Length: 274
Image (cartoon, rainbow, N blue to C red):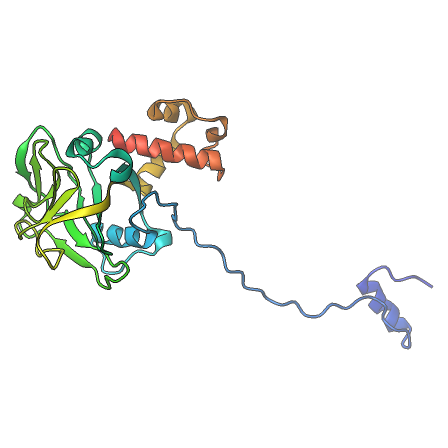
């Protein structure tokens, strides 16, 4: 007589001993379980106190001239805060000190005592040394949905030759000369159509801001390629300061390396090193 040691031998035993019960555990049929994987998008913690991730996804879609708004988890851009009025000051000199000749700028203004959020995108930047209009077809001004404001307004360039205006250091950010601009401390204006399709407020003239911000657009794909392929020493040289030991594993999903990669991307953007 032999003792069964497996399901197979157990069945053999059953074959020879017809009345012998099968003692092996028979498992039920396997079930196919579908696992929902997490989104592999580029969600990030926004640094703005005025706009949300939903707003940035909408602005990013306008930058790329998309008909459908990007999902917040697949936004190809990150907006890095450069200036916040309540933190850095509302004077035009602050704007020029922090934003002069920087490109791909997003300006957002929270209008005082309303739900209005107005703004504009300038891909070519402003120059404090010049008093002139600058040509681009890719800038735009806007009003965002927020609270009681149920619909956005997007106003693209109508006359590219008057899209962006630099008035030495007398004005802050200026779109179209008169369409949307900052004049002196905390004073903003929407006066008349000049460079853009339509006004972004129902009323014209001066208005005050609760706060305003200027942010620069970082392209994830453009900078990630360099950041992930660069060696620790190369990236440390770009960043211009010592990086933590944890950041040596730039391809790893660690907090230190993520912070270090972001620091390097910002530095590369500011140096136009891409």
